[in-house]
Length: 207
Image (cartoon, rainbow, N blue to C red; front, side):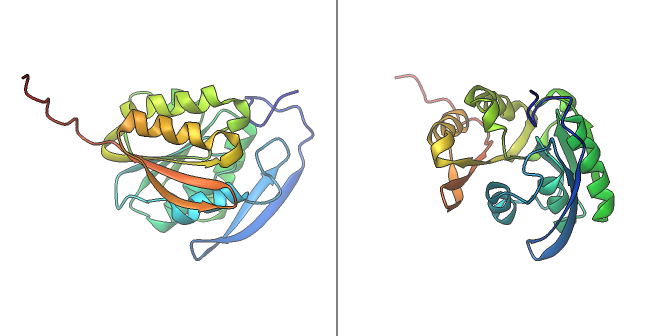
């Protein structure tokens, strides 16, 4: 049976409307069965959205966007940003496009595809994700491992993870990959992690 991270969904298409306040703004999201957390904005996404670092300018990637919460909030907060949202789930992509219109944000583009495949060759000031942990930690590790080649210098990778669903391993791998890690928030077992891509330090002189 397909999960929400599958390309096609065979579950009955049932629409829902989620109304919520995020970062002081009112949002309406059209959702449907077959996408992640379709009856409400889940706690992990909410914590990530409320605490994520939004660049002053440049490009922002909502990776695995679902029905578009993260990217749409970022686009609403900073209209100078160019926001790209991607998801493998075609149903989620359709909803994210509709929700961008519904919430009056025009500085967004939604692309269907798996992980970084739809944005090959592009670099971002921020990559933000509530990753598909149910697909397995290997997918999340791949997301982290490939992030540096898709980030501009000084750009950030920001991920939310749950304590009992691999948060410690994700935290360690982010720190190993980037050489730094900051915990932006923690609440009810959820953690928001941030790592920043910095220029490689000068090589130490040989002794």
